[in-house]
Image (tube, rainbow, N blue to C red; front, side):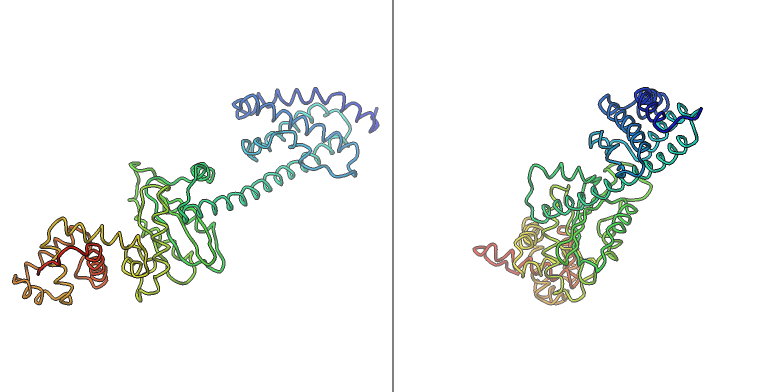
Length: 393
């Protein structure tokens, strides 16, 4: 005898608890991830399954009433459940629940079985919508958090919460970090930047400040881990990322040991970006250290101290002979013969000393650009020691 809808509803309400219990038992038997969950989350999943059964009964009672929403089902569980249970696992949960209900009502009329199929389809779509909205909100939150972290790095104003914010962003960088500063493109493709960085075994934090695009670069491979390919230098990584920037100059800050030191690299990159237009043939990207003279002339105290500490003082401490040779060589327009005549030595001696200078400080005085860097360092070093007698040549 065919049951009326009221009789079917009464029967469904009577067996709702039984269906929920059978569903929990089936989940434990068929889904390994459910059994591995802590008790609190297993209980939350059970509440979701029970809410789904109750919601179906209400929907079957009046499909044309105020449409049910996924929150009716998923609202029974704590918010943390969405972050611990994937969409795939949620769909498995729906499938198991529907199977249990279908088995219990297989001898019922066709209307009820058809309603179960329709409801299961709708709730699957609703689950996908819930996860899509959660992902969208997470993406917006991540973007704001990432902007906050980059701003903290640029300003150098760290607080105790910065490490946790960085961890929340999923930063996978290990070891050295470098900051890249350029102009923002008209249409910024953040996903493309991240894809390129992943292909280069790098991690990246992205920040936009007005017309500036700032990338904090780190290597995603831990130091000492075996790799099939050699680790790319940051300049090569920056070169590969160059198409993601707008027109104009692009400046890469020096390497620093870790992300907590990134403010130093950022400060150098920003200072270099501000004066890069004064270098007529500046490469793209340019190293912030290659813009030390321009930065020093613009009043950057970091550039001045860097020039003195990396060039003037090492030469002074190593050999006054090398320092005087460099002074003389630069003052004579980088002429070996003129320098040799003034110092009463053979030109080969000058060549040897210039080679030693390059070994000591890492800059080659025979190059026009590096000669400017070295001469600026000598001037600043002399100014920093006004009471020191001038070196005789």
